[in-house]
Length: 462
Ligand code: GUN
Ligand code: FE
Image 1 (cartoon, protein in one colour):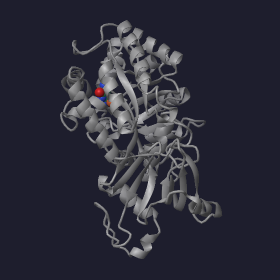
Image 2 (spheres, helix red, strand yellow; image 1 turned 180 degrees about the vertical axis):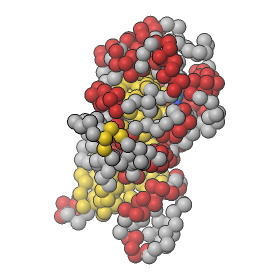
Image 3 (cartoon, protein in one colour; image 1 turned 90 degrees about the vertical axis):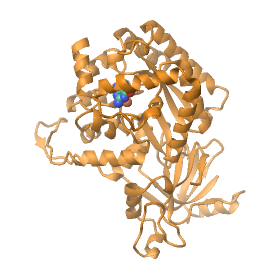
């Protein structure tokens, strides 16, 4: 496939590249095999030799990498947008566990909820998603199958929990839980074993829910399993007051120390939230090369304070963004980026103590801007998941995971969706950083025309 048009990506934090009138080729395996300005002789030759006419992205539109949602509870999509009046531990008892148990007992409902979730993810430009599922293996296999069939890169976590406030919703013992985690991982891989490597979109992830639902024995076993089988790990860490108080009271420790002790902080790990980690503890996370899924909306409800995003980035922690459905109620990563920026801006004026190399207190810009948020939602998430080099940007060898965004009609100058432009159309023939910012602030599903994952189109037309 050959494409000609404007490309936009963020290869580094804070860097927004607008590649105007480029040619991009995608090979048989869905990887980018060529990307260069259209006016290069080589590009001209490719256009002239193409067996099929290239896909032309018209003026007023551009391609951008798909979003990565680094933290989403698939079964909680069932009650997304309800019940956010309770603190975390009560909310889990009252809503989360019940809903998850409900899906584990009703595979038809699970199939329906997960298919609708997949539709919403594609509509919102999410090409890769790190998912928390439920306890039961079969329900997680439904989730994996739905994501694979929808063409979404799905990292699926069967919950491991041998402790629960809801006796009907937990596994019998650490041993039983470990055996199910092993079994799910194998069966999830079996699901796609007949496909060539590049078409295998779903992968199992070890998922100790969080310290309060996992015994030391279970955590230890999962740490060992991850090391033996080279499996990714995800969990929740240092999210809320009531959670940390529980861990201190019942386990006499801080959750980061418990995860570390059991070998669960690895370069393959993504920890959600980490709101209560100060710079010395964030330094530890960086040293373990563990990634953090920053979930700004759910933090606003459950965490009572903002995540130290700027400090984490400065300390070299890998960070991506998560919607945390249903602790966050919005599946749209574009909204998640806006929340991340808005919350970070509320921290302006705070002073931080520099940790690396100096003891002096220094003024640091604690807010992030929209370009940095875009990086976190694309490249940042891909790095956190350990996806092939270059994923989340347009570079040769990376999978072609992209979305086509339409800002305005090139003929009439009429803005699409909520975008209104009042300047001269001729100025807009050249894609500007201002128009991209306007989309970032005001855009929605109406601006999304197509989505591709691994070179395959998974949505066309709105
Ligand atoms: N901690 C443990 N489980 C959950 C969950 O389902 N949602 C959130 N936000 N935090 C959790
Ligand atoms: Fe969560």
